[in-house]
Image 1 (cartoon, rainbow, N blue to C red):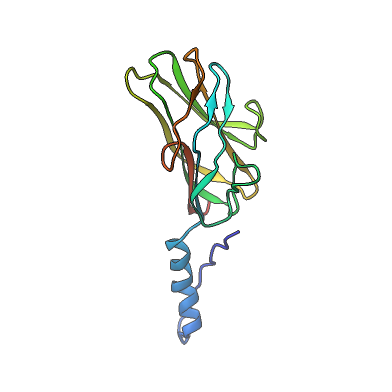
Image 2 (image 1 turned 180 degrees about the vertical axis):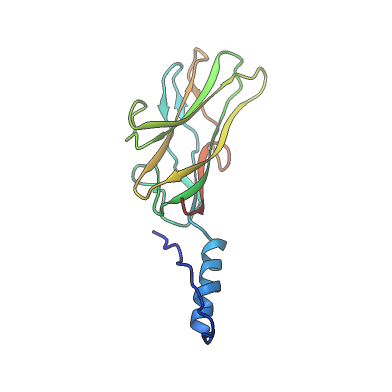
Length: 179
């Protein structure tokens, strides 16, 4: 867990020391230049038509706060540092003109499409002749220990596999500040 630096103050007439100046400027700036953030992505997940499917992430582009594991609970991004986060989740569905595509961001679902709480659901009509990209970005007030997962659904009438890769199917979290 990252430690959010405490605000430093100076008293009138106080002598400025190197250690106090570092604590007041360098330490907070170092934290803000590399805040808690995570980008976990998938190489592709097979989706049965009409079934909500948990998306697992087998790779990371970055993870500065141990928020994701590629070996245990790979579907989860677990908050390590409490605060306000910019959250993006997205998936690219292969070309198929039938039905809709859906992503559902859930809090503390424990891998169950009906567990925990829904934070955001987005439905998009399938695109004829092209991939369908479903994405949402929002700010969330997050608490250390809570985990987030996404579930995908499609109703094309056939099984399809999500396209995989960094910034193709995944989740991103970036700490913005204290809640």
